[in-house]
Image (tube, rainbow, N blue to C red; front, side):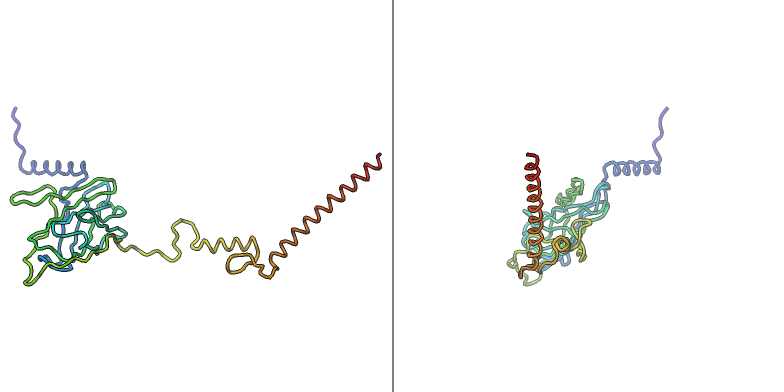
Length: 262
């Protein structure tokens, strides 16, 4: 008995089911990629903002770190951070830079922007991007685009227009090697330890005051005129004297009793 070929709708449905199963098994939807745009895509343009978008492709963890390898003619010292997820830190690295911090929520794209002092004199800029997730897995968008080919993991590319008339290459001023993206400022009563007092020194001072009585502003016991320490010393001397008197009385009684018995 010969089997009949699947109809076109059935074959399409089967392909979609297989693709969905593969995506669920690997946790990487096929449409995810990394991209870059420029505020002024022109050779030798100055103070250009480059915005990178890394689409979240893992179903198990969030993006935590991006390593960007800069194209030839663009040095790390010419790059500064403009915007990144809150709390992420920007650092220059060999051949480029990294930006990362606490993992983003699963499924959240990572968007960050840098400012380049001056673009190189080129027709296009290829940026290789290595994405690291909170579980340690990586996605590497590092393949160069080639005419007539469609790489599986293409590196982001910016096509540049011809340089403006009279534009020249200028000296680069070294940029800060490390920057942290702004985060929500802590409140005045915030403490790094849950449940701790906002002003532990004040609490400590209260306990000291309860244990030692009054004191001066420097935290030392009052007694510059002898009143504070004098009262405490007098009580101690009186207690010692009383003890000596009791012992002496006991000794006399014991001696008299022994004499009487003898």
